[in-house]
Amino acid sequence: MSEQALHKQSRMGRDVLAGLIFLVIALAFAWEATHYDMGRTIRMGPGFIPLTLAVLLGIFGAAVAISGFRKKNEAAETGPVSWRGIALVCISLVIFGAYGRQLGIVPVVFVCVFIVALASVKNTILSALGIAAALTVLCYVVFKLGLGMSLPTIGPAFGPFQRF
Image (cartoon, rainbow, N blue to C red; front, side, top):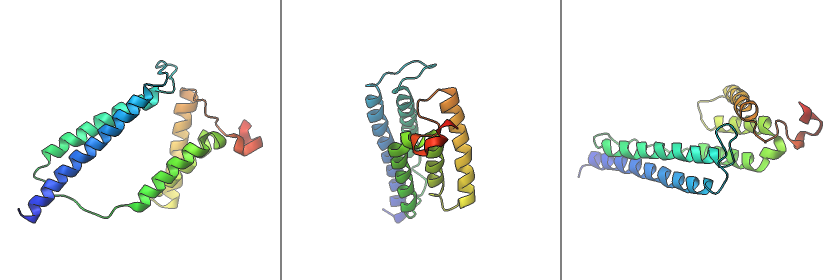
């Protein structure tokens, strides 16, 4: 087999494997979400969003796996692993989970999005601040005003500033 043929097979295999991994994660999250109250569309329960995201991830995973079977003639693209991006996304998730209630939705979303925006080497600090500000406003409008999320706007960590 030629080297190019090996690359073509590895590209197909990688996409199929990635799609299957997404499907397994989606199934695990969907199964766990069914242990929580779903609520209604108007007043969502704690299991509604995780189940919805699991379904979307499952659809995405299926699409990636199916596209992997169709890419038999495309060469594999190899490149270095973005360890910086992986580390910053993981740090952001830990911060959100650990400090969401203490900081509140506005500060924790701003900090986490800022950190994740810095995962891309193409973003500057100024662009990361702009992305963080825009997504913070969007999350506040959707989750706090629109859905009435119970996470405080400004958490107890800010003491007297909680009223704002």
